[in-house]
Amino acid sequence: MGTNNLMSQEEFEALVAEALESLPPEISQMLENVAVVVQQWPTRRQLQDHALADRYELLGLYEGTPLTQRDTGYGMVLPDKITIFKAPLEAMCQSKESLVEEIRNTVVHELAHHFGIEDKELQELGY
Image (tube, rainbow, N blue to C red):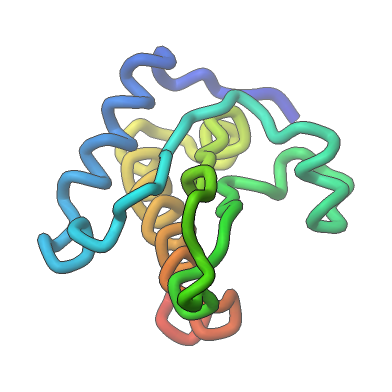
């Protein structure tokens, strides 16, 4: 399975930024101390941590402490990190239009984890 390489790194990052900017204000205001980055592929460690063998399976990754699990002792920590993986997303999409939609879905999916929403709940919501 090869990547389609539908767009440059800069174009892809711009679409991730657009997805973030299109969020409702009440959501974006809650994204304090969250870094969103684009990476070509997941690392071996990231795959192992999630019991995945195929690097095409991981489209995005949330690393941090969900808001629902934070207590009064939470502080002085590195930002939560959301990584969007360019190559696996491009590999699953046949067009730029479908890629734009998948980027947005992946960003929303990973942000939901930041808010404490689990995969099962996301599937019920259509993500």
